[in-house]
Image 1 (cartoon, chains in turn red, green):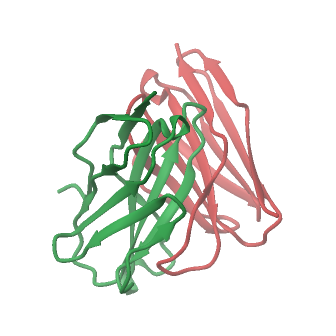
Image 2 (image 1 turned 45 degrees about the vertical axis):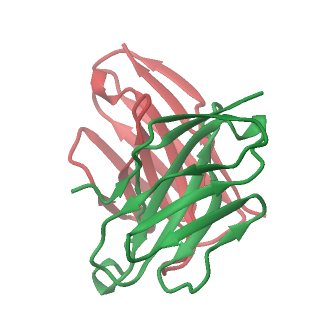
Length: 114
Length: 119
């Protein structure tokens, strides 16, 4: 069966510090991968998605970046965090293409920037 | 314009009663899919139910059903016989099909409804 992991689960970082969040998927090959951010009490905002190794699409201009060094690994990074980067970050994966393409979410990382 | 609108920020429902969570959507694409997710306080997103734009019947999954009214562009989630464990945030989401979206498998989410079940 497929599983998705995210770490760390929680993170407190000062403004201006770097960030690296990791997401890995097990039990599947060539998944589509996604990074979402959820501000407190808000809906999910898609940040990045990837349909293959090295292929990254950005949805929102910001100081974050994403990379996919391996098929089942998706990394969210920042060189210098802002206060507005605080939130709950969710990684998700899906298979194939088409309308019915359920996304499976990881447990999330709660980031607080002080 | 918002693609997904959830007009109920919060709802309180008595245990064992049925509850309807509203969702309206906006798209010009004839091919699309609608999803409902549940987010408990732990933060994980749990897939509940799916409705395709060409599906003739309303989707059902156990106590969950989707009241799909295509002409009104609404896809309300109905939870029958609510339970205390149903207390959570509920998100409606849409994926649009079409050639321009081929390979772009992103979901657009609404702002959610916080459902609280009262014992």
